[in-house]
Image (cartoon, rainbow, N blue to C red):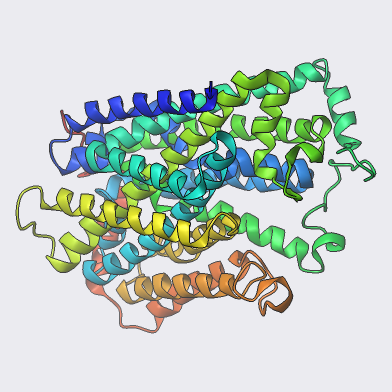
Length: 523
């Protein structure tokens, strides 16, 4: 009996039932794009956490901690601290001033067509790269867990994701993310419990083992509590510590510009609920990353590298599932495998939802048709067609790139673009009266181009590690200041915009009080 496959099918069946239920409630654009703004704080907190805790988090971070110890833990800290930026800067103004997408906030006081066009392009770039990374991960993981080959696995994940988005809209996507977050937390708690049980519930014994991690074979034990195993000068060269700072900048600031995270704040009834949902998300994500540290470190004291080696290559993405198999047997291995599958489905559904909403609402309705719908429901139809196109493109790219592509490279690109292009214009639009449309266009376009070019020129890019002209794998320390500088210079070097400055006070009042903001709709 293939237990992982049975659990996969059970999860798929449950989520399809949710999609059927949500489809009956999708009456109007607000219901389709924003779940009728009816999601409560704890529900949205779980959904935000479910959207954010991707396969890279669940499988990648635990694998990184297994290999790099403390440096891997620092990677996970960046993901958590990012939500302070979201809470203090983005969540409330976005919910109060927008409607369905990030560009709504920018278009509130700037000329809508150019900023919406570029914001839509940025959203599609970020979402597509992030989604390709998830698809590649899905294919590689499912191939190893249940024996389905890479191409059918990628196509299967893509088709399921399209069903959720096209028929269920944001409501179905939200509940898929909530269920995935709950399953992920249950799996993480159980795995952490088994790791502590292995070490007789003694943190002294646990950390002593971590400080003398023995992976088997002839290699000497490694002290995983020692910094520098991945980003230290001895391992990564003179640029290693700067690369770590750059990575953390990208994570902390990029999260506040990720389109699939930002659109979640439109699903709640008001800004107070948006803030409370961020607090819920921080608590859930914080607890989750503490547990990834437990089973990442724990795996290094329990699993020998031979158990993770396939065809002579160490597959660190399999650390959590193999640890579950060693400590909990085949059934627990199947459960963790199903959770990994649910993780990927939920994230790609959120990404597709944000990309299709941005194209339909920003580009189609507001750039091409000047904010006037041709026919009732046309915006939703365009969003569904866009979802098909984005999904098909992501499936095609994932299959073309194959299972060997560096998924971390693609995720890094998404965070770098979000931090370098999206965040500067969001921050300056809300907090700088002089900011104008030229500055927004300059910030979005320069941030977008510079972040992509620097990653292509990095050791993870097209030239490889040896011939890379740009020494950092993570360009945030360079591209983020350039994004802000471009937005600032673009504003100062262009004529003042009295209309944008006049609407600044109006935006400020609305952003901080919610006066005139979009309200919840009844189903």
